[in-house]
Length: 175
Length: 331
Image (cartoon, rainbow over all chains, first blue to last red; front, side, top):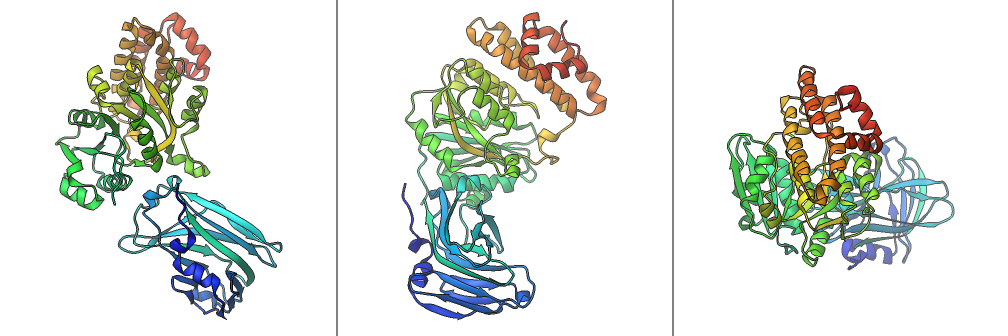
């Protein structure tokens, strides 16, 4: 069984993690790197900052002033044909001063427009003490996933309230 | 790049007014590289599908696809029988148009390509109703038989004679078995050509006549069930009364059998028949209930010996009790 490593699945992820970055969160879309962005419901009136120390993935200080329905971290994926892999997984290490729940999903673009979301079985819990989280989609158990699609993203749904979060690293793998 | 099929396998699919699901299935078969050949028997769909469109929309190589047609609706059993006559590969798998094969089916095909000769291999499946509980696999009713048979685990195992009658009591699906084509042809095993209950004869005759059965815990297929939908399983009409045709056929084969197979399968089959008749009674329109009772009484009186009655009371007390309330069982 061959593992397909993160650099191939999300080309922007490794470069972003290796570099030093910071900037303000935009009200709607904050571009972090090619194929990587934060997307907020405009109703949230998102504000705050992001930063990434060299070698670490992403720190977020989110300070929305409105109420809205979604806020997510999007990573464009370059997946092999899904019939050639059995698992698509993620591993991350997270911490947050207040307990947070994050929900990862595989977003699949549909022919003719639109998309469908396939959520991983487990939520990511971030708390004061940093801990690691791994989860993988067993693709056979998700028959609703099309075997070919125009595009895929990993979407990490984030809280819609004010929060601080440190995602020390995020890795993707396909087996 | 398309994957090469690991097993010399034809997938035969009856389809009736279900081109959307059929195309989805063909797309999966093409992507997973499971079938050397695919035969679709269209059962009177309007408009009739055409092979060129199916191949183009699914990505299946046109040379692999054969489209047969029944101009009037004759049911999935007749459609499967027609497909069987056109199979040229060593192995055969029947799928329904709304089934989806899994990656594990390809793994199973790889294993079967290197297995000793077998008549058929029964494999596990995922029933979409299980997803409501975030589980994957068969409904508990089916899974329990696999557990009792000691075959709930294992990529590929021979089915001992003692375990086969337990697996025979699982739901009579045609799409959870990979057959050796010659086994079906030589034994004259066919589906009943009725609109419903057309898989009973195929299922039971396969068990009764096979000399070598394999089992696999691979979840090879996802089977979608939509309660209250328009599937044939939800039909309430008089077609259900034709259930006695395959039941009678199998009961007579068991009675005529002089070998151990008949004796081995008799309690399993009549237990299954009892449960099925109870179920049919619960789904049938009221104006057909009297007719069902007359036919069921006659079937049960004719085929259940005193010894078999004792056995069923012991093995399937709930079904026996229910049947005793509905029908006239032998004294």
